[in-house]
Length: 116
Image 1 (spheres, rainbow, N blue to C red):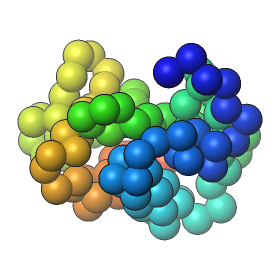
Image 2: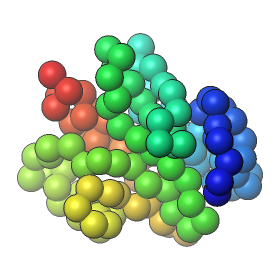
Image 3: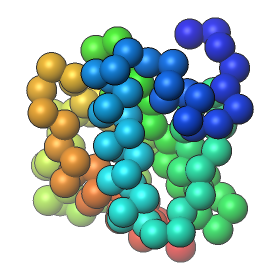
Image 4: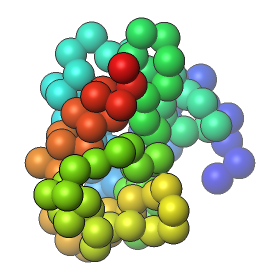
C-alpha cells in the first residue's frame, strides 16, 4: 500500500468493504471512549490525537486490524490482550474472528491514562 492519504476517511475508503466496516467501528469505539479526540494521518495510518499529541494508531491489513503502541496496562487488561500481541508494541486483531471492541475501549482508556 504505497498510497498517500490526507485524511482518515481516505485511508478507510481504500479498503474492501469488510475491512472498511471494521476500521470504521474501531474509529467509533475509540472516539466513544475519548470524546473530543482528534484524528490525523501520521506514518500513513490513522492516528487518534488528544490535546494535539498522538494517542494511538490503528491500521487495516488483509487479514487483521492493528492497534499500536501498547500502553501501560493493568493485569486484567494484560491478560485480555495477550492473544493479540504481535511483537513488543503491536496488537493484531484477526478479521476472521469477532473484533473485541470492549478490549479496544479498555485500551483506549489506558492510552488516555498514560497520556497524562
